[in-house]
Length: 161
Image (tube, rainbow, N blue to C red; front, side, top):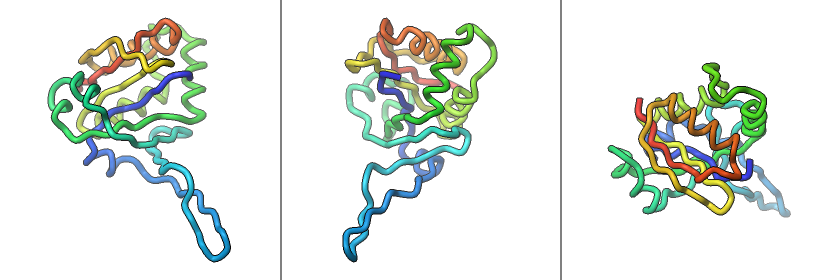
């Protein structure tokens, strides 16, 4: 997927929900050094990796409810399962009631984190839609954006359970 895609979650809960992946260790002589970014996973999202980044004031200003004042982190999503999800969207009717395991895992992570948001910014970091929605509407927005990524305005969707 050619977009920046991830979840915005409370920093206090994200640290307890995401599990660190063993770092890559390189040895030079007697010295061992960790290389690369810290990577995390969530047990319900197989073949997905997260990297954590601070949330910008611009993004915080567009979140609704308690999220707008919370200490947050952006959990950027990558991994083989994301590519599989994109293929699934292309091969299925976007209106299907069936939920893909990736969608189920993302919604469960947001629910366990006491709320959060989904952000998808297509190439060029476009963010043109800011909404507060129920989980089913968040999934519909995600599917439509992924299916038409070139035309997507990008979105930031606060998910309300």
